[in-house]
Length: 237
Image (cartoon, rainbow, N blue to C red; front, side):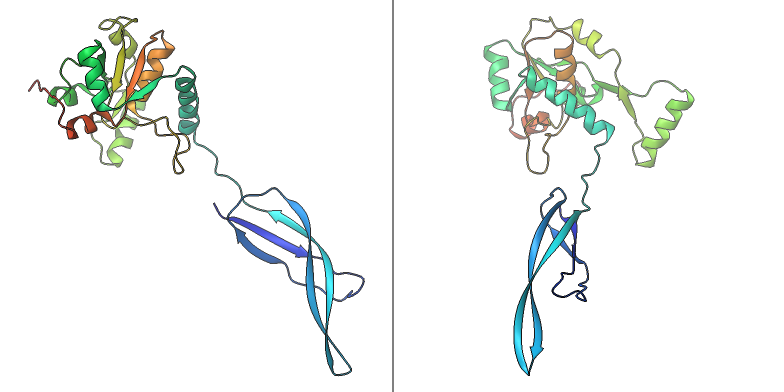
């Protein structure tokens, strides 16, 4: 991010009437306020001859750049990502996930909405949606529906409060689980995404580990990549 920096030079005893204007320039790095010196070549005429004099001026540098504050959602994801890394939740690509399911009895937990799951999913996958359609009709729920509708989303969702209960009713806590959603997300940092990219499957993996599941994996690339690679798919419609 470019930083706006102002420079103010000071006159010296050699040229008390020398009052340069403040200089402003942009820098590609963010630095703390500091001080430095600048040597300025001043031109002076004497007896028709041109002379150069060096003026060493003290200079104050004031940095006006600030990093944008993170939103509550970004701070929340940072905490969840840190916990996933601490618990060493590993990501596997779709081909490895298929092999692990077939050869090592791994369970694929599909956390997409039920309608998406029925349309197409990996064979043998278990569906427990981490988000569900907004059910209640309180003033707050109506306001949330209106907010979704403002962005053209007429099927607003909310976090499923029965997610862990639903998983526990279908999958043993000692099972080896690969959590899958549409996009996959990632905990790996990049230049544009230093905290990775959150997703439904990563949030679900966080909740599983938080609630005592010890063999949790994450499907890298999501089911979008699974379908794109032509891996086995079944439908319930």
